[in-house]
Image (cartoon, rainbow over the protein chains, first blue to last red):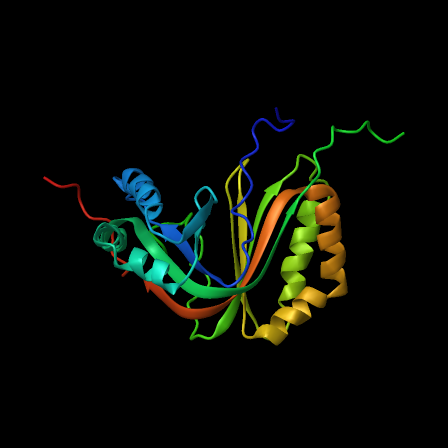
Length: 126
Length: 126
């Protein structure tokens, strides 16, 4: 159904502001045992938070990882921040998985999205 | 000097709020000619904006890319948004390089960073 069968889904959409974004940027250590399972569990768990809007993630191999979570309001973010299982995962992350990270929590004031029209590949010029 | 010679630098630091973050998440097309040069040029150009604080980027191979730019205030962001060369690059991006993208511009209310203590690798347990 797609001319790019390997292409991922589009990023999380641009919602109508205001909403919240949490930007979590990480450099990982070489000790990653348990990371994948915990990460998958967190991705499931956050979906249960009322007001969770979506999450995008990108990971440069051997480099920076950026996870961006979108939430309807500050209350939704606070519920996620205070989740006991999430807090335990954060603690383990500091102890084992992360060499460094930053978290930026911000209120979205403006957003927009772009999706290109689906057109078949054209012939080469000439 | 490092026990992780391949490790990247840490992500952009957590500044004292308020400041602004622009989250740009992309899925690219298969037509990427000129993208690398333009991207490198934009990374140079944005550094000239007064109030530009830094930029992080992560790219999942064949998947999502996330670029996060940090700016001191709305004026700095507006200057970058209105830069003529930047606008031309955006236009070309929509015409050629991006299958879809979203941009979220947000005012940071809270931030923190973590950097682990530098310790030599320990022996295996047992």
